[in-house]
Amino acid sequence: MQNQTSPLILTFGVSDPVGAIGVQADLAVFSALSCNGLSVTTALLIGDSARIEDSQDVDPDWVSDQARVVLEDAAVSAFKVGALDHVEHVTAIAEILSDYPDAPLILDPFSSRLPERGDDGDHDEEELLTAMRQLLVPQATLLMLSLVELGRLAETWRESADETMESDVEHLLALGCEFVLVTGTAAGAGHGDSVLANTLFGAEGMVSHELWQHLPGPFIGAGGTLSAAITAHMARGAEVPDAVLAAQAYTVGALAHAQRYGMGKLVPNRFFQLRTPALS
Image 1 (cartoon, one colour):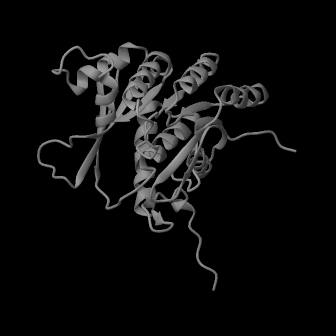
Image 2: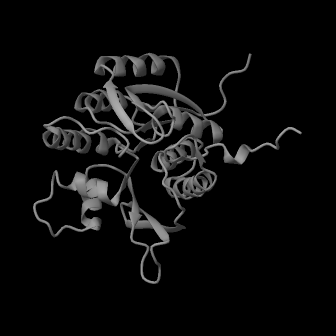
């Protein structure tokens, strides 16, 4: 019998029947990048490759117990927290992670794939975003979010409409987050709509600004693929800038080989590097 040698990663997220987002998607990425994944499910989704029709939250105590039992048994090399839409989940996960400050935490808490909440959704969203900012962001090694999601989060502290992306990122870094990766930033002069950019910020300012050719979609799960790949590379010992660069290259490959499962959107092919010839 052989002891575990590949890095173990614990991911928190939803259970998506299609595997486009959530824990199923993360486990596939971890496996493709030579890591082993452990998972804590926060919600069960009903949906297909086109849309999510409904969701059922897992009781917060069950979320905590799933994680505690696993963590008492095995030592993990990194954590990932995916899409969240329940304040009590944020609180429970933050309490657990506070006991493991030495393992890197990749925080990717937004997803457009999750269904909208009820009539009081605006109030719920502000409470949720504030909890994320206060409880999870200070523990994060890297926070990943799009430019639009950064704006939503920043509304919980902004005092004027004149704030810039850079000032919003500075605020997050001041809370204790080590790095912020903003996706979908402006590529810069001389580049058209066919080029996308992801910008990494650290304590000293901009760390990297990577340009990538836009690929035709539409896709579901691109962002989660990227954050899971970053987590895997960091679990294997890579520094944040190197992990981010390698994860972006992997994600581009997964999108270039994306597959359409049904009548919906394209799902990244996380195992594109393991293609085998067809049997004759």
